[in-house]
Amino acid sequence: MRFDRTKDVLFLIDLQDPFINSIENGSAVLARAEFVVQSAQVLGVPVLATEQVPEKLGSLCGSLKEIMGNQPIYAKATFSSVGIREVQQRLQVLGRKNAVLVGVETHICVTQTGLDLLDEGFTVAVCPDAVGASSMEKHKLGMERLRDSGIMPVHTESLVYEWLGSSEHPSFRDVLKLVKKYASG
Image (cartoon, rainbow, N blue to C red; front, side, top):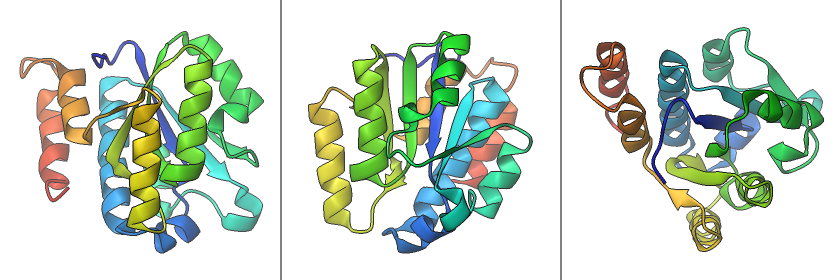
């Protein structure tokens, strides 16, 4: 799988405070998600963001909600983000068949979203540095299942540089600022 900003869509799955606060390395996962979402926005990659039962668990954490601005954020009760009718409609409108996943939890909502996307004929990747679970064991097992199912792991920085393609890209300097801002991941 080659990543292409004109063919990919980014899924931002359930990065809400109750989840971030309970996952191992939550602040690092959040930072990497912020990096890839901001990079996607700079490069024109659509971001489909979901919130798990927001009326009970709250909305996306503040930093991501701010980054998303006026873009739609889809509420869900299903574990898979593909279970939302509005997300399915948005995917049809976009016409893209490559999906990249970030969010929580690796072994539940991220996995079910990835498997459903595979069933829908998508090529799917996941950013291990921008997904997490309440324990490293759950994260590791989720990542193994994703990979065994044909979902490719890719580091967020590798993904973003592939979206750029070249240091001659007009947005290279903007993205480079983000790389430096989030360099610890």
